[in-house]
Length: 94
Image (cartoon, rainbow, N blue to C red; front, side, top):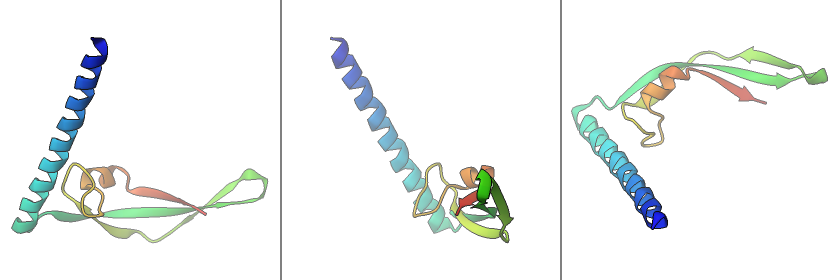
């Protein structure tokens, strides 16, 4: 009996997640037609270069504008703007 409730609960969570993602996609399509679906965020990148003795040297790259979508989830190959704004510093390991 408990196994059945677990399976139904997992199916409900999966269905709700699918509906949320589909709704986010539809909302993004509406924003595309209105012309305000995309934005850009300035991203600062740092190269992490390993050195002898286990140390790491950080080299700064020029800030770049990265395109993002105004959505909850990553859509069309772009990250959502709310996530990119909170993670505007990116470390690139060499």
